Amino acid sequence: MTGFTPPGGMPVDLRSDTVTKPVPAMYEAMMNASIGDDVLGDDPTTIELQERVSALLGKEAALFTPSGTMANQIALKVHTRPGDAVICEEGCHILNYEGGAPAAVSGVILRTIPGNHGMITAEQVRDKMTPQDSHFPRISLVEIENTHNRAGGAIFPQSEVLAIRDLCNEQGMMLHLDGARIWNAHIATGIPLDELAAPADTVIVCLSKGLGCPVGSVLAGTKDHMKYAHRIRKYLGGGMRQVGILAGAGLFALENHIERLAEDHERARLLYKAFTEFPGVFPIEPDTSILIVEFDKLMYDPELIRQALERRSVRCLAISPTRIRLVTHLDISWEQAVYAGDMIRDVLGGMSETASD
Ligand SMILES: Cc1ncc(COP(=O)(O)O)c(C=O)c1O
Image (cartoon, rainbow, N blue to C red):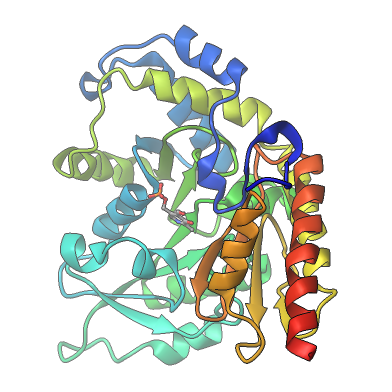
């Protein structure tokens, strides 16, 4: 559409932090990565990445995977047997956005808890437990997500993670942490990564979201768990050959793209403020880089808001009949965030005037 020119002339793409493209220095790191056949165990860059991530997370070993979905599903398979139950929060990624994989891959039941902004408590987990005789599914695993995607990048209180860990110890359950965006929790809270990961038996992290890599996630845990995980990755078809090209991007991102996440958080707050100025609009104050905005459905249609923003070269997602989602990331500059804020005011200003007429 003419008349709206974002800084840099390109659309401001706030649909997801997965839309980033490698920066030139990342491409260079990828080109210069030493490579070998990782399925045969001789890709030095992948080995280095796995060692680096396991050290950062304080785990014995780690495994590179093509996606966060595969890393999560390998973890579920490692910890469960068909017919088992996994306790998790109802809005979690493994249930809502992984194509039904817990049933298809592991044959498990998910016993869900309604969370408070994605957060569940040890007490809620205890209430969800069933007697462990043969009438009931064996509850082998609790799964939590930090930060929580659908809850708007919300950070899990570490004290509650520790309480859930204690319960897992008491009840003989494992704990898996979907830490696709654990980096954001680390930067927002200042809690070291290994401390955030410590209560979990296994943890996944993604390199292809806020860290700006084109592909890749890592699963970390004990050596024994990773040995079994390696087999599962193989039969799911996730063994990759000269994958050092991607691991090189990962190593670059760990070095250069973690600290800067603070900028994404700041930009998400800037967008949040733009939404606070209008009646019937309820943005959820973001802990990190994901902004969820709830609308009074008698006043606004999120899909129309998305379209109006799109016409102004600001891209977001309408994620439900009452909500839109905007995510800041490496490819969103301060100037682009300011432009998006102005466009949000422009769109909502026009609509709220119409609404009050
Ligand atoms: C919390 C969370 N876990 C896992 C994933 C899966 O990652 P991937 O898209 O790489 O499969 C995502 C993706 O957005 C996510 O938000």
